[in-house]
Length: 246
Image (cartoon, rainbow, N blue to C red; front, side, top):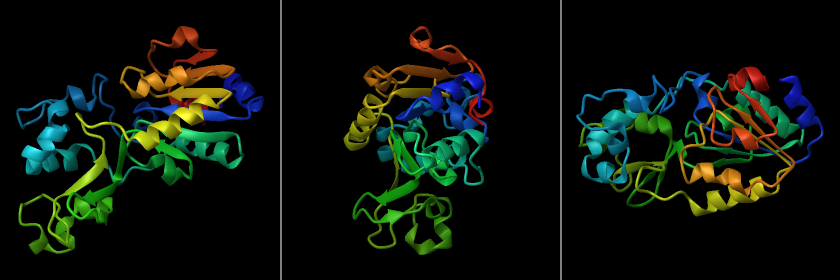
């Protein structure tokens, strides 16, 4: 761990980590808005990624949504990196009280973190839109492995109980963030004496606005590029987050 950050961690008792896509890029998951991010990539569908990841598109073009989602949003082979494991270790030591993440990959939990507020949901959770039956990510990836007759619409995963369309528990454009998750994140950040923000440009709202609930002693920003909050931070580190925390 960076020596300056290590000193702040040592004297803090209630640490919260707030992270974005940059935390998972070191595991091999592309981010969204960088030069090589998903939002810069041209799709073969004639629609922007923002449009294809909207609630309206999911409802009106479900099969195309899933064709894009399965190819661009799911990375079942990736593993947690040094940043994920370092945060899990801090929680185990009783230092870290919560992780607040904009990511939907579930890597924090895979690394061992227990208290995680997933602002944008998770690809690991999926539910039938009709009867709310739960389905794991593997069922979404390979629905035909369960029962092909239950999936008459090609690549649209359908519920084996009622035939309803299954929807990932991720927050699409036009959908609100989960109020309970937001309230938990706000409470955790409000009670923190050290807030470590990493791998996010703090440009996406309402998530980025959570930083304004922090009134503790030290704000640390770890990101490869500048953020709008750099001048307010006690410590700014422009580097890969895995190298800083690991």
